[in-house]
Image 1 (cartoon, rainbow, N blue to C red):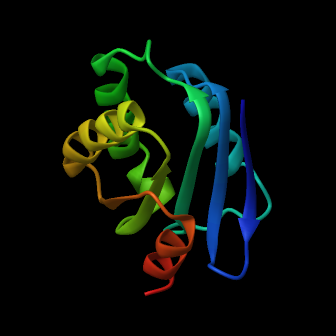
Image 2: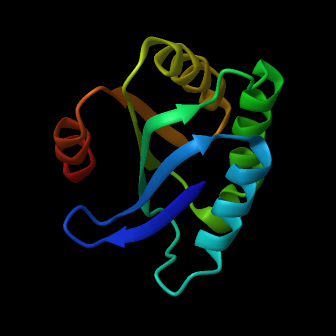
Length: 124
């Protein structure tokens, strides 16, 4: 499940991921965010991955997410930051894979183990 809300304190959309993380769930959450009242192009994002199951996520799906971000850039905006907060080594590995693939999109991705460090980075 992916929930999201606007965080005024860090001026970012905050996604909380629990349970299984899939490509379809990601696409649905992103589309809902872009249709929300607080959507603005270029808004930074904070993804918090805790207690999730992403171990069955194929690398092709991670690549598809990066390509999707590239295709929505005209509407989503350019040069936004995405902070990924992970709490285990498998999620860290997948986050690193996404960080590499995301270089094709107009975003900057950084990975954190601590949410407060991610929040500070998003505010900088």
